[in-house]
Image (cartoon, rainbow, N blue to C red; front, side):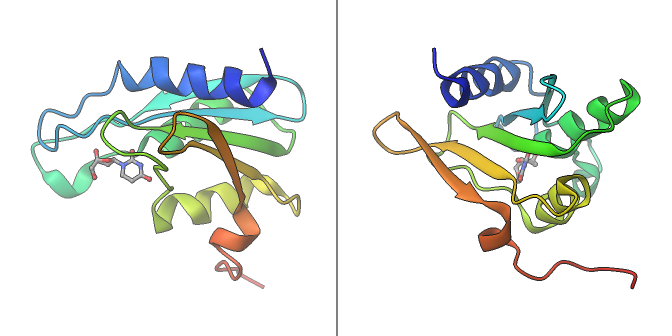
Length: 131
Ligand code: THU
């Protein structure tokens, strides 16, 4: 299977673990790094609604705690509730943090069930920077 399709399948699997009893909107993500390692995440909600953790940030946090230090090359995102499940604004800023100057590929499933790609620089051309 092609790599992008594989990552999307892992994101799909992760979405099945979503803890989303308030929104009932499951999301799964799979982050692929230059090292060749990949990490999954799902959204995790809370009775205090605003504390919900997005699937993308969950996957990226897992990568960090596992010791990942290489560039974020690709990130697949999937929700059974929506085709082309784009990352929210906060997650775009997080993705930039680990892109390290590389134009990370965002892999989504389109309306026909096929993979499609966008790039973080088009989704967030100007991120917040300290300097
Ligand atoms: N969500 C994500 O997991 N990723 C995003 O990029 C946007 C939204 C989750 C948060 C919440 O649990 C649910 O989707 C509905 O907003």
